[in-house]
Length: 138
Ligand code: 5GP
Ligand code: ZN
Image 1 (tube, rainbow, N blue to C red):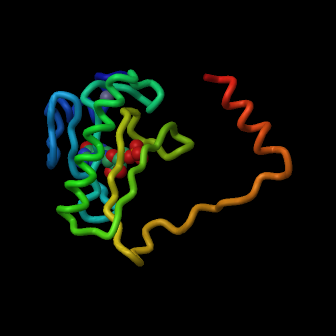
Image 2: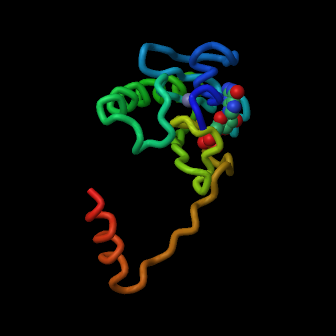
C-alpha cells in the first residue's frame, strides 16, 4: 500500500478527522472508530512503516517510550483493571491497516473480551529446532 492511499497517513496529515488523545512530533494517539472496549486507543508513528520490524530502531524506541505514557493515561482515564497492548503484523495476524500501529485496549475483570489463546506443548526436541531457526536470522 502506498503512503498516498494509507488511511493512517491521511489521519496523521489531517485529511481524515479523528478523536485525538495525544500528539507530538513522533506519534499520534486517537480513539479507534470500532472499539472493543471504551477508550480503545490506537498509537501510530507519524512516519509510515508497514510492520514493526520495518520501523527504524531509533524511532521505534521513541514510539515505545510514548506508548507506556499513553497506556498509563488511557488506563487512568478509563479507571480500568488492566489493558492489552496489541500490534497486528500482516494480514494473517489480523492487520487490516498497513501502517504500524499499537492498540491499547482497556480491560476489566470478567469482561470476556479475549478468552485464553489456544496454547499447546511442543513435541520433544522441537523447541530447540525452532529456536535455532529464529536465532540464525539475527
Ligand atoms: P488492525 O486490524 O489493522 O490492527 O486494526 C486497525 C484498526 O483501525 C481497527 O480497529 C479499525 O477500527 C481502526 N480504524 C480503521 N480506520 C479508522 C479510521 O478512519 N478512524 C479510526 N479512528 N480508526 C480506524
Ligand atoms: Zn501510512
